[in-house]
Length: 116
Length: 115
Image 1 (cartoon, rainbow over the protein chains, first blue to last red):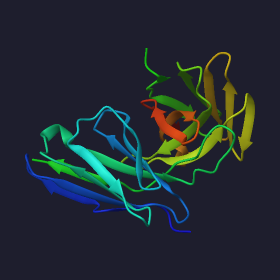
Image 2: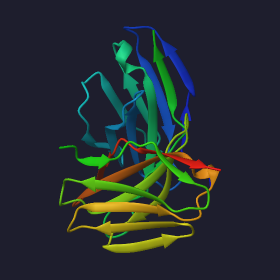
Image 3: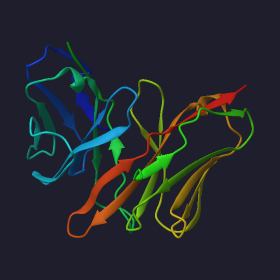
Image 4: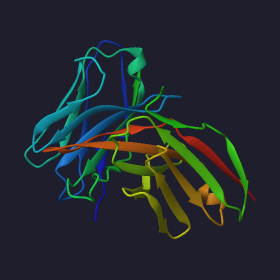
């Protein structure tokens, strides 16, 4: 079974530009999550999409946005890039069907965004 | 107080010994608990999850949960050099109707297994 895939692997942008990152979940998974992992910092939750809808959002400015397509793949857009946006962006997916407490999330390999 | 706290380490353990990783959380409404392993430059890999108080074993790994103490731990028996990585504890609170809300991660414990 194919895992979560992300593209591109690396992305280099200059300050002020826009970046688009893509994610395809595990087949059968309907929920997609985006996280930011900056150097020296932990994983920070960005966005959660399920069935095409944004379900929850982390403490990030509105220039971080995204969407989920009918095939459950997802796109993260970061507008007006700033130097501190340089980080590893991770996508995870879950099936929404799990144990009594929750739903396991599986991560993709990530996109390394560098803003110069 | 951080929502999820872990000792950042580094934690050094001799090969073949038991590595013990600990995590505390602040939200008593938390219901699901996960351990991820992250090698340097790679993405997190799910290795264990636990929902109920007590122990859950999977091969060399044992997760332990104590909701009264708001404490979750991971034991790695017969530690191998390949276990050297950062271990992330993650905690989830389920919202009814929509299920999974988000995972809140600790900052991770760096584990080094010494041959």
